[in-house]
Image (cartoon, rainbow, N blue to C red; front, side):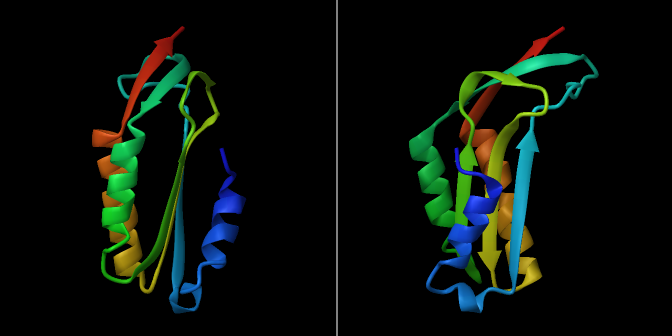
Amino acid sequence: MKTLSELIKEVKSHPDYAQAGMILCHNGVVRQTSRDGRKVSGLSVKVDWSKLQEIVETRKKSQGIIEILVEINEGENLAVGDDVMFIVVAGDIRENVIAALTDTLNEIKTGVTSKTEYFL
């Protein structure tokens, strides 16, 4: 899995990067506590890679978007604090970039990844 710094460096090497006014990043990590308040010991993540590619390619066509890069740490034994997902979006103006990151993240969470939390 590439680091967030590597993804940002990759975005900055994009041929249309000069048109960017913003890079926005998401770094999802394994939480210590689940949404319902239980203590988490770890997480497993499964990814539908073809669906991910489809979502990213579609979102790249959004107004003002130059590049979208996503890395997901698929695995069985992710520990509390481990990085789960990076999303990097570069685009022209704040409104376009925030919308693209939000839409991409929501689509990935609902249609690409499935997770199993393990509890203490």
